[in-house]
Amino acid sequence: MVAPVSDRGFGPARHAELALLLEVAGTPKPGNVDRRRDLSDLHFEHFLTGAVGSAAGLELAESGASVGEAFEAAVAGMSRQGGGNTQFGCLLLLVPLVRAAADDDRDLTPAGATDVAESTTVADAVGFYRAFEHVDVAVGEVPEDAPDLDVRRGGDAAEALRERGVTLSDVMDLSADRDANAREWTGGFARTFRAAEAILADDGPVTDRVARAFLDLLAEEPDTLVATNHGEAVARDVMARAADISDPDEAEELAEAFVAEGINPGTTADIACAATFVALERGVPL
Image 1: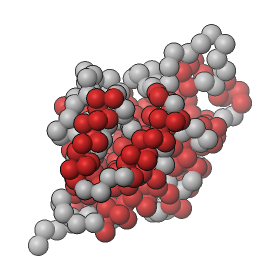
Image 2 (image 1 turned 180 degrees about the horizontal axis):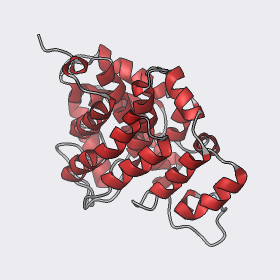
Image 3 (image 1 turned 30 degrees about the vertical axis):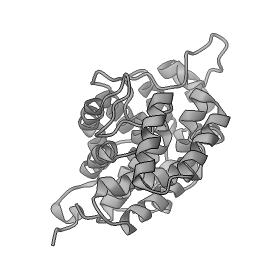
Image 4 (image 1 turned 135 degrees about the horizontal axis):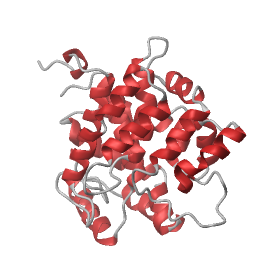
């Protein structure tokens, strides 16, 4: 019998790195890079390199460093590959989860993750904004008349954050109406933990479980990256098309179609990655 990975001496940071690797290896995940599909500017090896590059920041989170410091370090390390932004959103979810899993005063539950999120500081918010300077996140160019807390300002927003006393939790509250990852922060990582339970209850190789969890997540809520890039109507159509999938062949066909149409449900992949981490921490066998 194969021992659960949690019995092999892997800590939360290593599990988070492994979650990044397993998520991109899962297939098919319609519209996203996986072990069988590249996008025009993002390739499988970019994600593998980004996962390894993020390790130092994830280790900081495990060691008790602040969420903002650990997140910026993880993003900086992730960015050291030729594809650009591979796992920014994954890391935004993983870092507080790693902190919760590693903290003796908390545990890896919705309550523990919420406690980490709500304990963030202004310095954490500054670290989050600075992380945008390491990689091109799909938020567009900053216009001259943009608000002083627009994330596209990067580290230039630090003074405004400090003057207003805005914590990273506050930033997520401001973004929750339009960003699913922010809603995870403000909603107890509800979708993350539900998808983790689905991965644990499923059977077969973990990469297959992750791919199925991704499809379930995609079918339950419009992907916010798709909405940002293509509009809300397209995001809802993507959700409906995912809900119509009934077998692996149809999932493969949808994967090919989304790549051809330039549809990339990246936010859903972020949540699937976070769920994979929780499943690994809870002993999903490998």
